[in-house]
Structure formats: C-alpha cells, structure tokens
Image 1 (cartoon, rainbow, N blue to C red):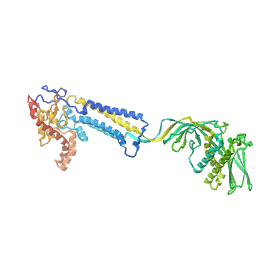
Image 2 (image 1 turned 180 degrees about the vertical axis):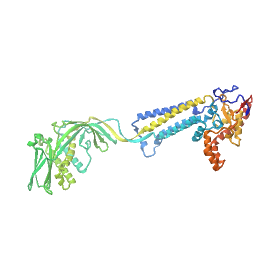
Image 3 (image 1 turned 120 degrees about the vertical axis):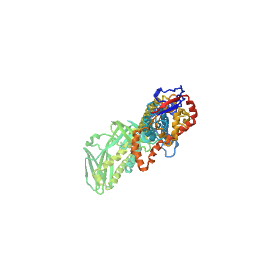
Image 4 (image 1 turned 30 degrees about the vertical axis):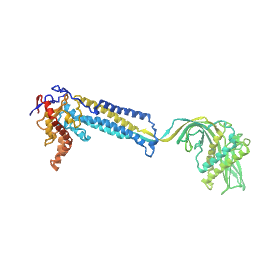
Length: 636
C-alpha cells in the first residue's frame, strides 16, 4: 500500500544519528526537567556519598557513644526528642525525594527515547501510548513486555530508596552503660605511715571500733567506709559531692588480720567451785582458772612467757598473740579456747567506693609486702593489751571495756546460733565466731594504728550507669552500603541516560497538558491519532499497524512506517491469551475477556485523545507549514 503525504521538511525517518531536517529545519529549544539537571545530580550524589562519609566517621568517633540529654530519656513530652529522633528519617525522605525526582524524569522521557532510538520498532505501545509514570508494578510489567530493561532497572532502584527509610529510623539507640568519667584529682584524708605517734593511746577509737564490730556481727550491718568486706583498710580520700556511681582509685591498703586456731589438746582439773583449765597450742601451754561465780564465763589473755612459747618471750604485750577462753557451767561444766595471732601486710590496691553508701570494694591487689609499720617495725598490734606504763588509768578502763565487749559479742553470737552452746563448745564453734568479731575490730583500729592524716592529692575516676546514645553499627553499615549502591547505580543510570538522549532535544513543558499543542506532529501522524481517537475498535487497535518516530533535528513526531497486516502476538502475549484470556472468555463471555487489556490501556487512551484533539486545534498551522512539498512513503 502506498500513501502519499506532504511535508518533506517535517518528514520523519528513524535511522539513527544521520537524521537531519531536509529543509534546514531549526532545532527546537529544549527544556530539561529539574531531575535531569547536572547540578541536581551533583547535589544528589554529593549528599549520598557525603552522608556515607559522615556516618562512618561518626560511628568510629563515637564508638563509645555520647551522653543522652535529659529530654531524650524523660517520660514526659519533649518536642526536642521528636525533632532529633525524626531527623534521620527526614534525611532519608529527602534523599528518596531527590532520587524519585530523577527517576520520574527519566521514566517520563522514555517514550521519546524509544521514538529516537534507531534499533527500536517504535509501535504505538512503545511510543505515543507509553506511560511509565504510574504504578510501579504495572510499569514493570510494561517494561518487560516492551523490552525496556533499562526502565526495569530504574524502577528497581525504588527498592534501595525504600530500604533507606527504615534503616535511618533505626540508626540511633539509647542504652544503659557503665561509663567512666575522665580522671580527676581529689584531696586525700589519710595515708599509711610507719610512725603514727601515741595519739591512739587514749583508747577512744578502740572503744568505738569494738562497738562497731559488735554491731556488725550481731546485727549484720555493712562494713565501715574505706574498709573492704574482707578487712582491707584503705587510705581515705574525699568523695565527689552530688554524684551517683562509684569512685575508683589506686591507693595503699593495710590488711590487719588475725589467724585464729583451736587448741591442739585441752585438759582440766575437776573441782566443785574452782576449775583449773589447760590448753596446748603445739608446745605452747596456756592455763587459766575459773570459779562458779557465774554460769557463763569468758576472758582474754596474752600468751605467757613460758618455755614452749619461746617465740614470743620478751615481746611486749601489745604485740603478742591473744587467747580467748569461754567457760559454762550449764548444763554441765565445759570450756573452749581460741588463740589469735595478728598479722599485717601493706598492699597497693585498686578500690571502688560507692558514692551513695560509701561501701568500699577491693577490685585488684597490685602488690603486697610484709609490713614494717608500727613502733617496733616487725610485729603488729593485737589491739587488746598495752604496757601498763604507756596508758593512764582512764585508758586502761576503756581497754578493759573493749575486751569485755568483744567477748560478750562472741558469746552472744554463739548463743544466737546454738542456744544450748553444747555443739559450739564441743566442735570448737567459738573459733570462727571469735575470728569474725576480732578481725572486724582489727580492721577498724588499723585506721588509728597505721594511718595518719594527709591531704595529698589522689587520682580517681567516677563510674556510673547512665544513658548514652549510640550509632547501631550494623544499621549504620547497612545504610551506608545502600546509599553507596544507590549512588553508584544512579551515576551509571544517569550516564547511560545522557548517552541515550544525546540526539534529541526535550520539548518544552514536556509532560504537561500543553504538550499536545507544543509538540510538532506531521500531518500523517495527526490524521492517524485523530482517526484512532474516534475509532470504534479502540486506540490501541487502530494504531497497531503504525510505527512512530521523532526527527532528532526538528523534534517533529511522525509516522515512520505502516504495516499492511496486524502484528503477530509476542510470546508473552500468546501465553497470556492461551492461559488466561481464552478460559475467561469461555466462562464469562467474550466481553469479559477484554477487561484485562482495557485496564492496561486505560491510561493510554487519555494521552492519545489529548494529543489528537490538540492536533485538530493546530491542524491549520501545521498543514500550512507542511504544504511546501509532497513525499511518498511506501508502507509494507
């Protein structure tokens, strides 16, 4: 079939880069959408890669987080929390909007790319009736049918922008962590000294220590400040005021403890009112006598200057081991005895002091040495005896009250555990009870015996449980990876798109209602579109035999080819008709079988109708400008 048409100036061929305007037609002024501006792309990729660099840098720099503001962790309404927590999501929305603008512009120009590409067939579905700006699922199906795989990849980029939003929302987390502040210097209160003088010999501190030791054992109160649970007495220092948490410091500690053991053997001389008792601690013999003035008796003495106790012969009373003895006439006479030998060591330790309760905990022992502290330099104080010549009468009375208080506490604690006291006496139960009370007492009097006041600076660190904000590592890395992939992927797509549209100029106001008036169309294409708009068989069927193209020099849209017979269905369409359309028609009738195709081409109809009506409005000017010559096109 031969068709004679006019307008050699505006005749359209679609044979690649060699297409030119036959009559020296002027190349129309272009109008590049904002989404395709190079400056817009620069902004988009600058933000993508810039945010990646910033996020990875912040993740490394704030690996330990930063303090959460009070308005972040409060339960009441705080507008700042919602603003700051929404900032990452807002940034993700901006990036999605920017990339969506570029993606929309590329999809909108795809019909023009198809009409100017020399290797495309250019039928109506791929050109004048093509629209990829609708639903992404429908657009993906159309891209597969039209073999527009670049469009399919472009639509797939939406998955990346979709992933950015939830990742940005989960970027930050607030966690409870144990945090150490920077080291700070505080003034010391006491320090270990080898010569503390005689100030402690008024026995006031000893009396207070015995009362505290008694209360701790009988009433289970906690240890005193700067004394650990195991009995280390540490150098005291000033604690920060108005803070919760724990103060850590490296200080010197004195471990003033006694080794308490039961006797090797015991013996007594049975009497009616007076009992003579003897106990052996290895070769050292200790004897004492009691009478029946009371049902329960107890006392404390030092080891005597006996031949078997030669290790302590000549040692002052305050440095000798002490012996605690207990006697009861109920229900029958029975006794027990405990020997306690004080020992003292000095250590460099790391301690933790609770700022609320002042409880001191031993963290580590760095170094331990044998003590050389004290007036004699080789033996520790037993805290219960002193030479009579060194104490006045009042101090001696206080010392005796200390002895009685410790013994009473031990006996009372034993009776609380074993009211009959039978097993306590038989199985040497007084050994552990006495050791517990006596060692508590020794750790308390160590402050008076081995420490002196001091204001030397002490370096401490304060740690506390606090809320800190963190970048979630896996989320941060995932978000950065998605943005890098989107940036590289987008850059490649932009470069490919620049190459594909290099041969034509984008019409002004392309994509608006005015496009139908401003886009030049030759007479043959105008007639074809007008005929299709009024055809009873539908626009898609009416234009099935036409091939459309655009002159890349003049921007004129025209018919490049007219088929003599309808095109055969493609493979996908044949599968569609064989498996879905025909069974549908068999069940519901022939009219229902067209519903799927009508739904697919509904959006195409409005586009073609608008274009054809606009061609009518401009037919007079178009025909006048196109009447300079005639050209014969042969359609096969």
